[in-house]
Amino acid sequence: MKTRYIIIAITLFAFALNSCDKVSPPFIETKDYCNGNKKILIEDYTGHGCVNCPAAAVLAHDLKEQFCNRVVILGVHAGFFAKPNFDNNPLFAADFTTPAGNTWDTFFGNSIMGNPNGLIDRVKGPTGYVIYPQSWATTADTLLLEPAKALITISNDFDDGNSTLSTTIKTEFQENVTGAYKLIVCIKQDNLVAPQKNNDEEIGPTPVIVDYVHMNVLRKAINGAWGEYLGNSGAVMMSVSYEKTYSQIFPAEWLPADCKVVAFVYNEASKRVIQAEELSVLD
Image 1 (spheres, rainbow, N blue to C red):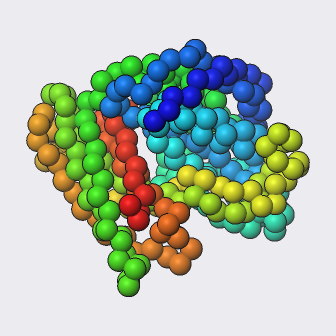
Image 2 (cartoon, rainbow, N blue to C red):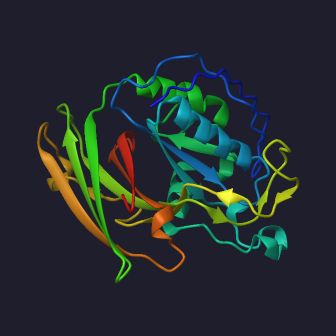
């Protein structure tokens, strides 16, 4: 894949509780990111009432390209700005929130920190898990220098007759690790058209993009918000293949052609994600 070389700059203004912080273009040095098998998970916490969230979504997309597709994006609609009928306006009737997204939002403290913000591999820093867009690039850059501790392979089989997906996730650890490890498997969907507040004329109309195209929207964590152990009690070994298969019936609004399976493995104690992967449902 062609590496995209860009020079970017991020300016993030001061925020308050339930603020919606402005995102300016990001900055990172030019590198070749096409060598390596570690992928990172960017969880973009967002909502249709957040005027600066479209810029954060653009940033996440640009970073995915810059990092040679070694980024898995999950758009998590949760918290104050994601409420249906936001600001008592029926224009924002869409509800993209999920039980898993709400659980993560509460645990990691995203809403109380304001939007847009996110998690990068759920790495915990001195001030907590939440990472603002100004630091997404530099945090991701550091993580991508690490070798992959595990590799994930996804195999999907979708039955049109009963609208049911069968997905098999195989995880193979590349080194011996200590602690308990869990797998989370999600469905995300692209091309969901619904109004979105916006204050960046370069992205679209202001103050609202009526036909905004929401991408990477978390639809469901199909094995629960915290997933399940890969091995007995979570202990794992190098060179052992851990395989799990899940079945999910698709509601009418989940268009299979626009959906992907996202799988990621994390350390139960630290919550840190060590590998992520995605695959289109119809691949």
